[in-house]
Structure formats: structure tokens, C-alpha cells
Image 1 (cartoon, rainbow, N blue to C red):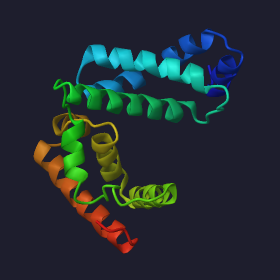
Image 2 (cartoon, rainbow, N blue to C red):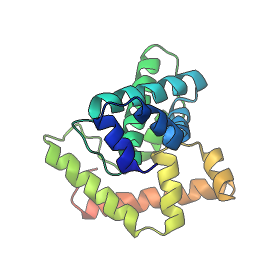
Image 3 (cartoon, one colour):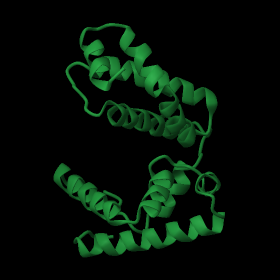
Image 4 (cartoon, one colour):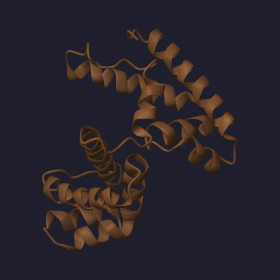
Length: 186
């Protein structure tokens, strides 16, 4: 079933929308949540929470593409859960490690006064990523968007962990240089 038809099911308030979303993207959402949380049960709960949030968001939203819209919801719910778990002294996963790695090359946002600054930063990062060779871009996104471990990234790309670590180090340095040239204070 196409994304457009699934969105129409949400607009019609048909419970088939959830079933079709799960059939189409359930494994993808589970992957995102599991990589961030490193916990099977929490990941399952996040996937269910994604469907609830989708139900409450569509309508009025008409997301296109649906996968990206709901993947972002899943990721944010998982990050929120991770922070909640951390507050309860129960979590960690790859999220905190990945954030530590990025701390040197991305502004922390504490000085950001408005949404426009955040949008400018997002645009600058997206331009940088589009300029990377495809393999470097995929490795970077796999580590810092999906929060995959270095080991998982290495296995997926058929590389050694040291090669992945080296690639990520070089890409982070390039990102830092790019953002400095774009006028961001690091």
C-alpha cells in the first residue's frame, strides 16, 4: 500500500491505518528505537507510542514522505525515553556516546535564541552531508542518526572498527571546518 493511501486511512480514522503502517514500517521503527535504547521491551513500547502519536497527528498533518515523518517521531520518542531512563539510572546505549563524539563539531544550542538559528544549523549540516561521498554519508548517518554502535556500523559496511572510527573522525573534523566557515561558533 502506498504512503498516500495509508495517510488517507488516517484521515478516515480507520484502524487499518495502524495495521498498514505496522506492516510497511514497523521493522524500521523498531530498528530506530532499539539502536537508541538498546532494550527490546522499550523499543516495542516506542513503536506502539509512534502509532499513537501518528493517530493523533494525522490529521491535521498530511506527511509526505510518511516514513520520514514517522521515523522522526520514533527517534524523538526513543531519545525522550532514553533521557527518562537515564534520569532513573537505567540507560545509556549509544546515544550518549554519539553525542560526546559530536560535541566538538556541533554547537550545543545553549546560545541559540531562536528557531531560525536552529534551522540555519540544520541546513548547513544537510548541505555538508550532501557533499560527502555516499559511503561516508551513510556511515555518518548510521552512527549519528540511528545511533548504531561502531561495531554494528563496521559489520554493515564490511569494514574494521578502526576504519569506521577513522572515517567518522575525519568526517567530524570536516563538519567542524564546514560549520566554522558557515559562521557557527563552536
